[in-house]
Image 1: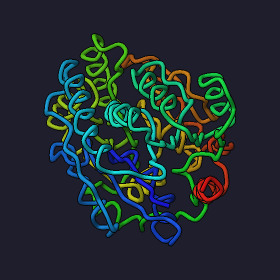
Image 2: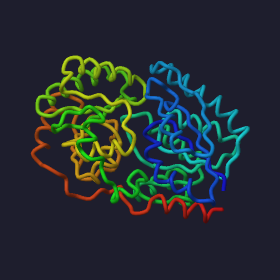
Image 3: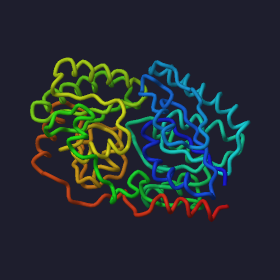
Length: 367
């Protein structure tokens, strides 16, 4: 079976990894990687290098993003991605093509494949994030796909309602958590030295723009900086930098300014990679921000999460999530209160055993 896999960012690539290892090692599959988006951006860490280290037999690279991140630039990047993928789909054919999540460039690549009848298999469909226009992109991808692999039963039901039938929808759990029960963090001292983190307790922080409330992002980014400056008095701050979303640069500027103000209390990381990120989560005292990894993965590491604003609003939550408004005083207050709780001991609603194996079984039954 000839399988294509679309990856446009460090985030989706890290989620794919358990599935990629199985596709790569199984002679039933002829795997080709299709890398585009921020993977080819030096500004975002040029994570194509990480993909090449895995020695996949075939890696296609498609440059699709322009530098700016205002609304017009995002729309232009969307159009450019569609144009380039129109040529790609005309010349490359697969039995199935994996796509994941809700990024605008992922949506553009998928939309270009519709006239060609590309058989897309969508991972993480059916979810809801009311504070991001990714919510629209995710549903677009779902409607263009013929196979659906959801992270929970709730989302399976949402896809059924969206497409009007319950065929080819499989609740497999979160792929990123596959084999998390076997995960062993990098030895603590080595991890801290590798990323130049002081040997002290820290908060793991990730903030992305709210792409529905675009006009408020300057205010939100300012509130973020104020909150983190205060929290840095009690915890070191380790920050993973924002994705290439609309006005993501506004948050980057605030974070870089904060780094200049408190250089010894703040560590900025462009790209951890999955194993390093999981290690960072393992050693963190708490997570703060508005990223999906806090919602989906943190409970499996016994961490509480201060979930800020509306970006993840509507996504199903485990009981480790503490929601707060995008206001500095509220973020500070909830962080201090939550630190008193210690470790989270409940279940992760996104975890199911053998997610990658279950996806493989479905593919082989479809052949």
